Image 1: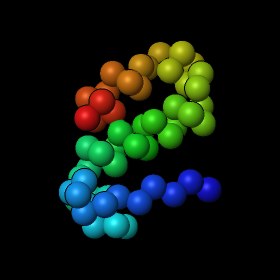
Image 2: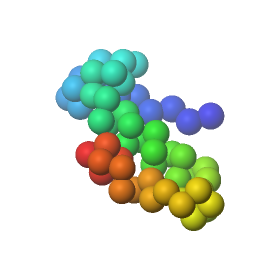
Image 3: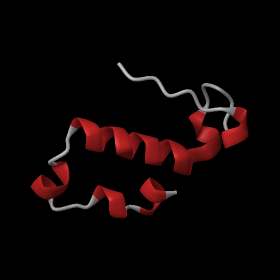
Image 4: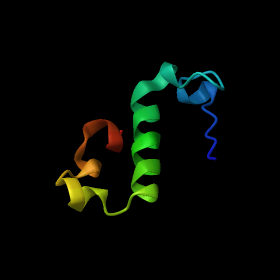
Length: 55
């Protein structure tokens, strides 16, 4: 299990990542890349190229 607490300074309020959706998307994308490192090649999609992943 992974926990990422989003802070008020990041534009969110502790548990509410929707206050900063680009950050939440970037965190989720980074986590998925850790869990499935070969997914980019397997599906032919460069997850790092998704704009929200680099925000």
